[in-house]
Each structure stands twice: as structure tokens, then as C-alpha cells.
Length: 218
Image (cartoon, rainbow, N blue to C red; front, side, top):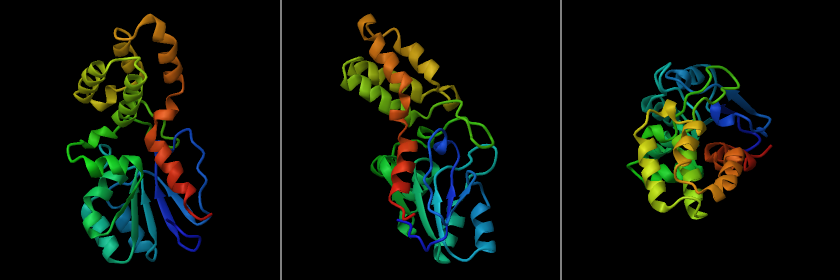
């Protein structure tokens, strides 16, 4: 991971919401990466380490493969995890970008996962308050409900397909709960509400960030 004597830059936004980041002293927090941010780093600083978590999708062009590849060739180290970072790490593994975490492993092992599996709508400025919930979190949640037999596997498949075909901005916990209510027995409503109230346990993007930082030297 990142050592104490390495200067590093963490591009992060909504994946840090409502969690406490224990950062190495030499790590600088940057907003979600957009096209040109890596080029600007290269122009201003000597080679260091970039940890790419979040990036822009719509308001600005996304960080490109070419600028990451160019930076790696110039001596920069790149880690990707959690969100756009995990996707870029899989795509750019052949040129030396490193990946970390559960989301990275999911994209690495499944070529059919779409980019919007990790996408969400959020505030444009810190603390980047999430407005919708990424499908990856909802998927972990629904799988747990099926495992605990609060819903059947068939219901899990049906709801996952329905939500997969929905615009990611409409994927909210309110919408998920509304669609679950017709499938959950009245005796299991307490269990359902308990899990929704503790939904942070399913936010694997956030958990990947905390896990990665825990392995960095502070």
C-alpha cells in the first residue's frame, strides 16, 4: 500500500460520506476526479501515488484511460477502488494500475457489470451527500435478505433486474423499500426495517475505502 514517505493524492467524494477517514499524514484529499486532473497533477508535482475512488460522470468528462496510462509511464503509481477507481483499475491493469477491494474484485470477475452498478446522484460539493443509492449497495442488501429468507431468491432476481433497468438516479432506499413491501411477510417487517436503518453495513464502496486506508502507513 502507501508508505509514510510517499506523497499521495486521494480522489474521493460520496464514497467518503458519513465515514471517518483516517488518512496518512502525506495524503492530500482531492474532489472526484474529472478529465484533466491527472494531467494537472503531473504538471505541478513530481511522480507520487494516486488513489482513485470517485470520479465525475456527467457534470464533467470522466478521467480518461490515456491520462492515467501517461502518468503511469511517467513514474506515477495508481490504485483504484470502490467506484470509478475500481473500474479504471480493471481496465488499466495491463499497464500497471493496481486494484483493491470487493468492488474491484467484482468488476474484475464479471465483464458484464455495467458502469452504473456503482453510480449514484450526489451533491456537487463536499460532503457530497448521496441522493440515490448505488446498485452495488442495493445488491448486497437484497442478497442478505434472500440469505436470511426474508425474501425468496426469485424475488431477489426479480427486484435486481427491475432496479438494474432503472435510471440510477431513481435507485433510492425509499424506492427499494416500496418494492419490497409487497414481497415481505408482515412477521418479517421488523427485520426489514432494522436492516434498512443499518444500511451502512451494505455500503461496500465505503467499506473498501476504510479497508484500504487501514493498510496505509500513517
